[in-house]
Structure formats: C-alpha cells, structure tokens
Length: 266
Image (cartoon, rainbow, N blue to C red; front, side, top):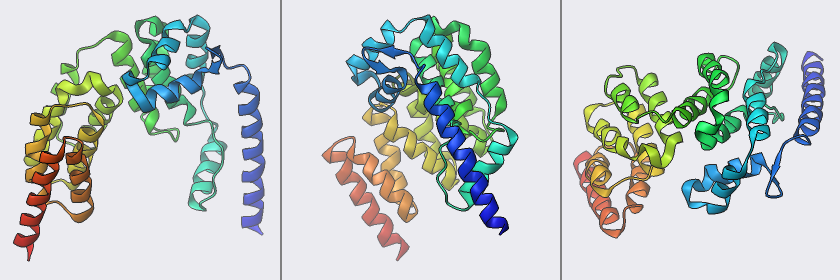
C-alpha cells in the first residue's frame, strides 16, 4: 500500500512537472525557426563542425540570454529531489527539468562574452557542487564561465597537475572535455596521467578525454599503446577504440600491445 501511494505521488508530480515544462517550453525563444535548445543540442553533438548551429548562436539576442539564465537559475524543490531519487531507485523514468540547466549553461558558454550578464548565475551554479541533484550543472557552468571570461586554458592545466584527489582531478578533466577544441593544449597533460597513477578511475577518465577532445597523435598514441599492455578488459577495449581514431597504424600498435599484455598475464 505504501509503495502504491508513493508511485501515485511520483506519477502526479511527474505529470505536473511535464505540464510545467510544456508551458514553459512554449515561451522558449526561437532562432532560425528552431528553439534555442535545438541549437544547443546540435552544438553539443557536433561542436565547431556545425556551421548552421554556430550561425544561429551568432544571431541570438538578449532575450535568449535572459531565458538561458532563468533556466540555469531554476531550482528543484526538496520533495522533487526526493521523488527523483525514489524514481531512480525503482527504475522509473520521470521527466524532470533538472538536467535542462546544464544544457542552458552550455548555451551561455557558446554565446561567449555576449552572455557576461550570466556570470553571477553561473557562479552560483558552480557553488552548488551538485547538491540539488544535478552533478553535470557545476561542470558545464564552469566551462561556460571559461568561455565567457575567455580565461586561459593554462589555469585548468595547472589545476590538473596540482590535483591529488581523484574526484577533483576528474572534475577538472570534465570541464576540459566540455570546452572541447579549446582544451586541446591540455590533452598531453591528461595523457601523461595514464602512466603517473595506478588509479583505474583516472585511467578511464583520461581515455574518455582523449576520445572527445581533438588532439594530436603524438600526445595520445604512445601513452594509449603502453596502457594497453596492463589495462583491465573493459578499459582496454575502450582505449583500443580510441586508438582507431588516430588511424590504422595506431590501431595496429594498440592490438600488438594488447596481445603482448595478454601473453604476459598468462
């Protein structure tokens, strides 16, 4: 009975949240015939390769900035956070607006200095540190601040090298991944981390970063090939997939290293 009442309450809140989202989405600014969220998703997936998305961002005005700030500033209520967790525990998918805030932060970052008025809202989002159920928001908000302020990537590289805690290190790498092409100078420092630590968690994060951030062959391939000799099965397969990104020669080197590692473990 208690479970049934809780499920009914979750369904009610989900319906209210969906209705509120629908009403709010109707007021979302439109650019080139599409809502802003459409262009944010296209830019997130294709980055600098999507010229139409870049053109759309260049045409967005102050109304778009204001709408995105409102999205970032939205906060879920305590009961909504509890219901989201309960739904997660019972593997029930409930439409929640929480994750839209991270997307809005991405949009503000793409607008760059034109979104300077959003800096206080983004700083508050970073300070939340995921305490209200959205672990992605602080990462994307920090990436947006770097774009808007045009900060040097060296700041994050220094933070990366001085980081001892795995969680802090991974958080900094996640910000760099969010910056995509702009983070290319940091890839060599991320790759070197493969050989400077035995943390499987750091290894996984580093491989993910090298897969996403545009990078030079010489920054990644030697470390990935060496890594293949002692990686766990799942992580090794991921590293092998990233090596394919750098061409047939890198892929072949990875397969040879994998075979050598397997032979040593026998």
